Image (tube, helix red, strand yellow):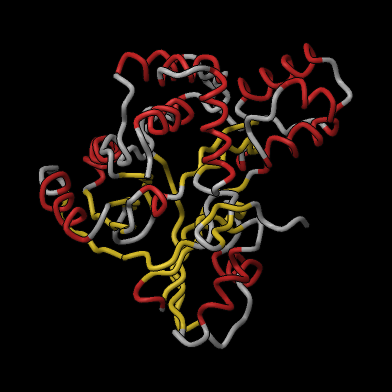
Length: 331
């Protein structure tokens, strides 16, 4: 279980994924060496991964949510097959193990049937499929991540750390250059790969690495994701809450929900329930408290449904194997 130092390290990384260990140590009240050692232990144990990823908007792709209802006796092989695909993200089993939920990355102008035929294998396991477009995500990177494990940085520290993150210009980010591949491959494995190591891998000077990182980050081409495994942090119940909100209230409700410490993600989606909320709780009673206090207190919600996650299969870029975050297989 996490102690205070671990929680501060996790929160600092959520605010600034490449923050130097010296500053992380200062925030956590430990030495630079201790901060580095604690981080490496969390990463080695599969509790945490910091990843540098190419923004999918570079390639003109949108994100589609898919709920695939399956025969329970045939669902697992199909779910494992989908989780291994690079264009499938955030896959998990829900509804007692009879439903696969996943996010499909596909072009916005692709027809619904084309998405299913291209991305989902034909299988006798599939009984029904619902696909909706993820229209908008709420919250500010660094300040609206899940912090149910215990946010132990004060608001001013969070503000200072997130203020240092570059604000990409509006519009689609530019694609990376051909020569960026070694740099991006290293960051996709470990988003905190040092500039010295990146220089070795690319054959560039350290100053050129620094300039290229700054250019990729400021353009929005390179983004960072801090993946945590909540089950290893004492939070065993994960749920997707589907809310129905009037369009006039959607922005306000979405932003308010994104600030809840129990929430890992909030997005506006097409479909009857137009707000998707990923909630992480310690247990059923903790989830009930959240629904009946935090959600119940928000005006403008006139309907909801809940899908309980029973097995997590994939985060944005990590598979879950034997209770650990692991890289996907090469190729």
